[in-house]
Image 1 (tube, helix red, strand yellow):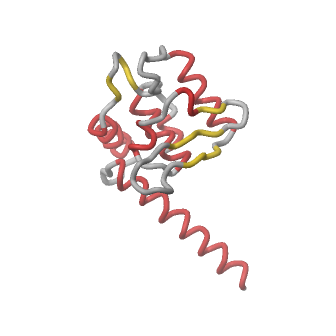
Image 2 (cartoon, rainbow, N blue to C red):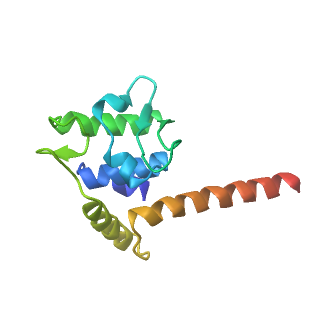
Image 3 (spheres, rainbow, N blue to C red):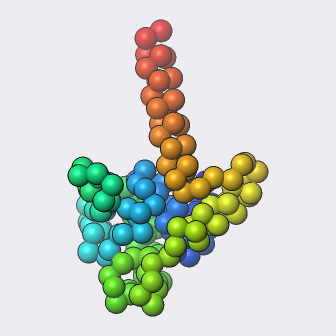
Length: 138
């Protein structure tokens, strides 16, 4: 799915791309400001409000940062400073979920929401860690 999210340079596609790269909630990505992006060190400040420890710095890969930079270069900076705002309005969760539904259709899988995408990502990570740990013990 990550490769599919790189196919278009729309706000919804980039939100999904960064959710996959960071494991962040959709709200954390929607709250991303230009000043939160460290292009040199490939880090993003994710400003989530869910818990006291939700706000954090997350490192992403160089190729992923380059994809974000390419997106930023072709999309004008909004006066609000938010990466995913246009004319003062941030893209909606509903628009992101609609795009995710289209991507799920392309992958011939059941439709998910941005919230369930996050949980799916963590389940995949945990299962791979479990398999790796099991393999190491044998």
